[in-house]
Amino acid sequence: MSDGRIFREAWIAGVTKHYPGEPKPGYVTPWDETPEWEREAAAAVYGQVRDFIKISEGYATRLTREQKGRFVAICWTAQMFRYFKDPKPGYVADWVDLPAWQQETDSDIFDRIEQTV
Image (cartoon, rainbow, N blue to C red):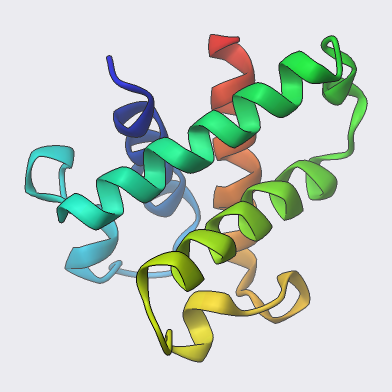
């Protein structure tokens, strides 16, 4: 499975688990229907998290759940600036401004990537 697909599937699983109510269709779009830019962004963030874990020689596992989620969120924010000249504020919101479901999902994504390294 590709790096980006692992990221996307972890995102969908997190949204399904943590989103209050019915998530927006775009939040749970399957990989094969995900826009190319989003696939590239997902693969890039996966790579950043994977490399971070490797460079720390595995000690990134000692980060708190929040720290792991924050790392995913900041990597994703950088990708939004990469792909959008003027991204929507919600696309580049700071961790404290993200809804709880998104924070939990980002933390789950780190955990999922950690399992593959």
